[in-house]
Structure formats: structure tokens, C-alpha cells
Image (cartoon, rainbow, N blue to C red; front, top):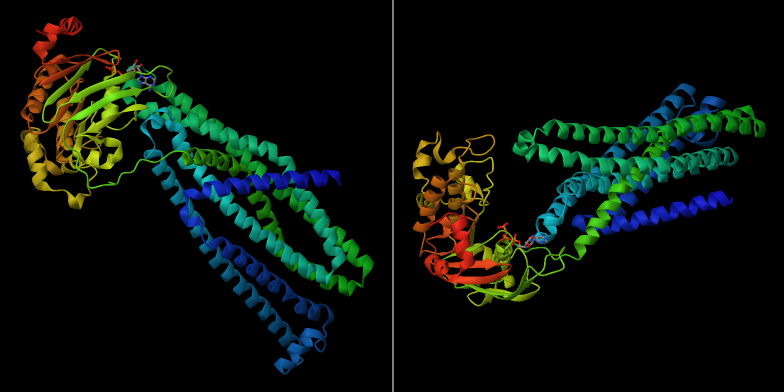
Length: 612
Ligand SMILES: Nc1ncnc2c1ncn2[C@@H]1O[C@H](COP(=O)(O)OP(=O)(O)OP(=O)(O)O)[C@@H](O)[C@H]1O
């Protein structure tokens, strides 16, 4: 008694934790709200009722078959209604009723499952997309700290586990348990004692087998979840970091690590599969024992005729009960395995609760224009104790070309990330034309075009790569023509087999470093920005290409505010203003010639770069 009480308490606690977690992750799928869950449960009750009717419809048939009496009870009623007491006609009619009852029940059941599966599988899709939304709209600092393999695992595996395995699993379990309860009710009416014996034997066996499988099943699921991350962690550097893997001859060891992870997943899957199957066999054996026990009870408490009728009804009921019982145990195992994903997802969802997502839509009609000002900016990285920038003030003048230079670690990237609103200062402010950029980042981004060091090309046409993020039908070919000229890409496009329609990237034309950067410039210019930011845009290029690109950038002078962050001083020599940073502070500001004269540190940098 104490054991079963303990088991019930443990089961209730696990169950309530699971429900709590389900409620927590529900925010990821807004359409999980609404009365559909109530409908699903009502539908399950109705189906259980239909099941009962199906089995109950066997009773008159069994009575006629065993007693051959066509005059009393329901068979008598049916005989009178048919207008004949012919045994054969009565048996055929009653068998017809049974067949029709089962047919209707099966059709309704399939329709119900179709509806329920539609609901839950759509929720899974919705939650995966919502999780992706939260990841891609996360603060940049958080994103940099995240592990990509973990993100892939959470979106690809934890979401289906939580919504399909656990969410749909619970609804399926409820429906099946209701069916079992309804069938047990019919049997209870037909033969209370035999039913009690059967239910007792089966329920004890189910509970025991589930409890004994639980630890091993949870362990296997946890092993799969962590091996999945290891798999991604080996796959990504092998593909994303193809060159590094090739040049360090580490591709084979990455494949080995991937195989190792996949083997662990395979081993985990094998364990979960077998652990889910074992209860089925245990139940089959228990079922036989229950039938034997019931037969003994029936034959020792009633006439052989009554025992046969009851056994007939039990046989019909078990036709429906055994597969349902099997599914109950399989679903229970699957729910248990899925709770690992549900727990992970609940934790992730909670983390997101405290994070305000980035808003990609404007919140005002403001147009950012004018000087970019950093005013007493303090910034400390989340993982650091000391600030990188401690009260930094600087101005990037409107319409000028400003270069931000400094030795490695001076704080250039940090300043740039602040100007781009990717990170937020803990004190001080970043303003453009006197307006805080934080007030409307989406509006600020509309005014900015950024050329990064590594231009990200997609496997689409050159046109789509330039008008990045613009739906194909909305691309303006006049702007494309203008930016091709501004980025000095016209000659290159003329040589392409399909011109602007040529597909770039992995499966298309391969571009040289210089061509890639020009596409990056054209892409930045397509947005018709008032501010152009070049983030180490020429660092990876050879000297000749770099000076060509520098000339291209010089030609844009005066048409917009240009901010160049560069290591190579040749790129920034012609800037109208150079801000020289050292240890997170503005060391000096001026033209190239002025800085050389006024700052020994800058002069040293020039000398090291062998520039004259
Ligand atoms: N995510 C981070 N967490 C902690 N410290 C960081 C982080 N990123 C940068 N730093 C530190 O902040 C300082 C400034 O770095 P930053 O990248 O801004 O310099 P930089 O001038 O752009 O350098 P480089 O030219 O090498 O790119 C460095 O001391 C660096 O170690």
C-alpha cells in the first residue's frame, strides 16, 4: 500500500511539473490558446462513448449465438422489429449492426486524429519559428555568447519533443485512458468480479513496468540530447570552417567526432526504442494471465453459458483494449523521453521572458541625419569586470569621411558596435543629429549601409544579393543600375554569363575577394544610406585590390557620411578626419598629416605599417 501511495505521489509530482513546463512553453505557440484543448478532451470522451457502444453492440449477438434464443431480451426486440424469428436473419442483422457501429466509430476516430494531429503538428512548426524569431531578435551580446549547436538542437529537436512527443502525447494518452475506462465500464456491468480481477492485474503490471523503465529511459534521452549538440559541434566547423579544416588536416578528425556523437545518439535511440517496446511484451503476457484468471473466476462463479457470453464480450473488448493498452505504454514512454526536450525548452523560454526582443519596425517617423556623437559612453562587456570604454566622447561629422584607427584591442569594434546600436552603453549616449539612436533603431538602420569584412553571399542571383532582404518582385532595377556604377561593378556584370541574373555563391559563380567587397558596397548603397560604414572592408584584400576599392570609396565622398574602421592606414589616408583610439580613449583627432605631426604613437603606427 505504501509503495503504491509513493508511486502515485511521485507520478503526480512528475505530472504536475510536466504540465507546468507545458504551460511555460505554450507562449511559443500562440495558437495553442483557445478552446481547442477542451474540444480535444470532449472529443476523446465522445470517442470513448462510441467505443463503448461498439463493444456493447456485441452483447446481443453473443447472447443469440450462445443461447439460440430469439424471443427474449434485445434479440427478441430486434426479431419483433424485423418481423421474423429466424435465427439466421437475426444473427446477420445483429452482426450488421456491430459492423456498422465499428465502421462509424473508426471513421469518426480517424477524422478526430486528423484534426488533432493537424493542431499539434502546426503548433510544433509555429513554436520552432517563434524560437528562431527570439534567437535572431536577441540582443547581439547574448547572441555572441550562445552556442550555435545548442540553438540548432533546441529548434530542431527540443521543440518537436515538447510539442509533439509530450503535448500531443498527453492528449493521446488522455483519449486512450478514457477509452480504456469506458470499455472497463461496459465490462464492469457485464461482469464486475472478472473486470476487477483483470483491471487489477493489468494496472499493477503497467505501473510497475513504467516505473522500472523510467530512470533508464530518462538517462537515454539525456544522452541523446547532449550527443546531438556534440554532433552539431563537429558538423559545423567541418562545413562552415571548410578551409580551416582542410588546411589543418582536421576534417577527418571532425568526421570521427561526428561519427562518435552519432553513435552515441544511435545507442540512445536504441535504448529508448527497446525500453518503449518492453512494456508491450510484458503487457501481452499479463493479458494472458488476466484472461486465465478471469476464466477461472467466471467458470467458478456462474454457469458455463453465462461464462461464454461474458468471455465473448471480453474478447471483443480486448480486441480494442490490447492495442490501446500497448499504445498507452508506448505513449507514456515517449512522453517521458520527450520531457528532456520539454525541460530544456522551458528553461530557454524562461530566459527569453526577461529579454526584450529587437524591434525591426520603426516606432517613429524620425529620419536620422547629422553628426554621430558618442557622449561620455561607458561600456563594459558582460563577461568583463573593467570597462573597455570609460566616458568616451567623440564626433563623426556629418557628410565627412571619418576613419577610426588604433592598435589591436584599442576599442574600434566596440565603438562601431555602439554606433550601430548592436550594443548599448551602460552610461552616456549615442546620438545622431542630437537624437538617441536607441529611440528608434529600425529607423536608424534605414539610414545606414554597412560593408563588413566578410560579405555574406546567398545562393541567389547577383540582383538579389545586391538588394539583400528585398522581396524579388520589389527590387528596383534603376537603383541596381546606379549602385552597380557607384560600386564600379558594371564591367564585371557585363562579363557574367547571365548578367544580373547570374547565381552567386556556393552553387553559382565564385567571386574574387575584390568583387565580393564591391558586391558588399553595392548592397550597402542599394539602401540609399545617409551613413556608410566600412568595417574592416578592405582588410582581407591584396594591396592592388585594396587601393582600387579605396578609390571606389573615395568617389562616394561628400555624398554621405562615411565611417571607415580599418587596420590598414593606406585605406584611411585620404579621410577628412582620423580618430586615433588607444586603450579605449581618443588619443588624437585630425587629418593624416596632422596626426603624424601631433601624435608620436600614431607616427609609430605609420612607421610600423611602413607608410610614408
Ligand atoms: N565579447 C567580449 N568580451 C570581453 N571583452 C571583449 C569582448 N570583445 C572585445 N573585448 C575586449 O575589449 C577591448 C577592445 O576590443 P575591440 O574588439 O573593440 O578592439 P579593436 O580595436 O576592434 O581590436 P581589433 O583591431 O583587434 O579588432 C579588447 O581589450 C578586447 O579584449
